[in-house]
Length: 72
Image 1: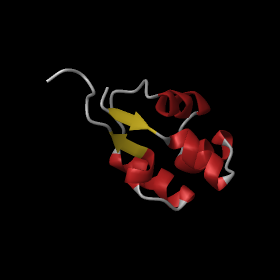
Image 2: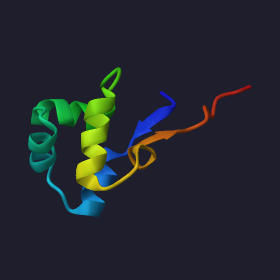
Image 3: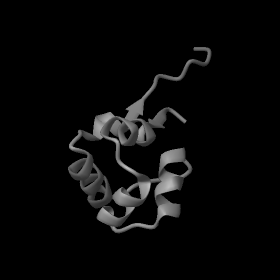
């Protein structure tokens, strides 16, 4: 997938535990773990907004598009 989720990096930079963020956002730790691993098909803007609010960051700090390194 061309979109990389860097939520784990932001959590480490901000010294925030997954449990704290999940509680603030209103999602389960399991769902946050799936998001961190990139195993979700999408994210609601409301959820992304709350994550960015809590971590004091921009969506681009969490979601990064990387050009496909394949042939062509």
